[in-house]
Length: 161
Picture 1 (cartoon, rainbow, N blue to C red):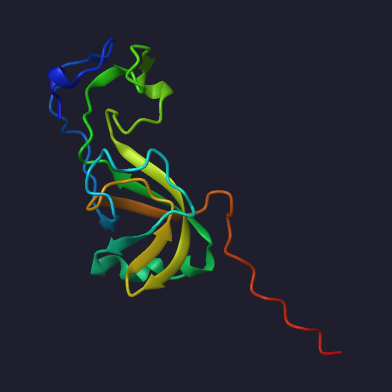
Picture 2 (tube, rainbow, N blue to C red):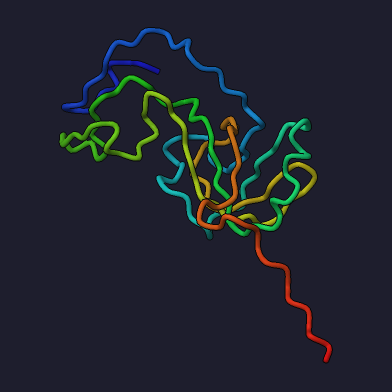
């Protein structure tokens, strides 16, 4: 996705060697209502539309216990992002910032992260709210909310005394 004609004023790209130093294993795909980058939100909204994390069947058992969390972190591969910009102009106004000073999807390794609300789980598919990626985006990983290191506490039973 490295087209120098797509650069905004004052942006800078670099020539890159083909990457060969890591292998990622996609665990499924993300289903969202957005098929075009122009319509995709810049940030997810926990009240946004329901989206699906569709896991490959081999990973279904890895979901055990995740239903105990309200919020989960989703990591995904922004497969349609260019990877060669070192300086970017996010507002197209000519003002530039270094790539690592932005949360832009345009990165050397375009890994996206979103904290999403877990609505429900249905046979290896997680229904969530709060995503900001295109339909068909490859799913890398799912983790419980990093601020909640343990699942929700079970409801307390009455003392019965």
